[in-house]
Length: 249
Ligand code: FPP
Image (tube, rainbow, N blue to C red):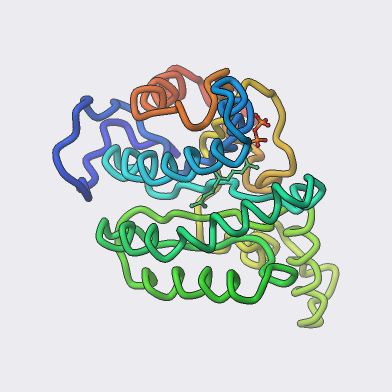
């Protein structure tokens, strides 16, 4: 669903760029290129993740200003555990250091934080802070920031099937709507636009079910350099796409 000329309330101060004419309701971002951004500057990879974390706040606010309803960011995939231990430990430490401050800032901007993925296997202190961020912002009415953390699309579908089986649902009663309601994203609209920074052209296990009819946009810009202007360019490109959802018109 695209909201042409969306008139949603701005949650922040005056904005520099004009609001885009067409705004996707649900945007997903695969935030790739932090490592390359750092390498090009002769910095350690973790410096790229630091810069990437800063950018999450900027882009969340730019999405809220534009009238996006839901922004899902791919913060850490179930496959990212395969990275070298020092990078994984560094990323977890970074999240632990920053999560409370970022959540407080987003709370001031009326952003509602949700988490998709599994908190099992995440260090308990960090899992607790993720739950606290969700709780803090539960009643907010602005943009939903859906954080895919320790997330994999296939695992999410398997979890939904497990939930159905645990409820004793009969095979003949399984419908797309029922599966949808048992995913981590229950209640959220399907994805309209997936943006991938860093130039790759793949979904990498990101919201597989919800992206069935999403438009895809890839840019070579690394995540820390992907700003409001680039975001609104992606929205403009989205506005030029003709979406048929399998039909002819
Ligand atoms: C991909 O870049 C990025 C990640 C695996 C981590 C992304 C996480 C953040 C930006 C922090 C999230 C922050 C919050 C507040 C939720 P890469 O390391 O794969 O880059 P490369 O392809 O250049 O090596």
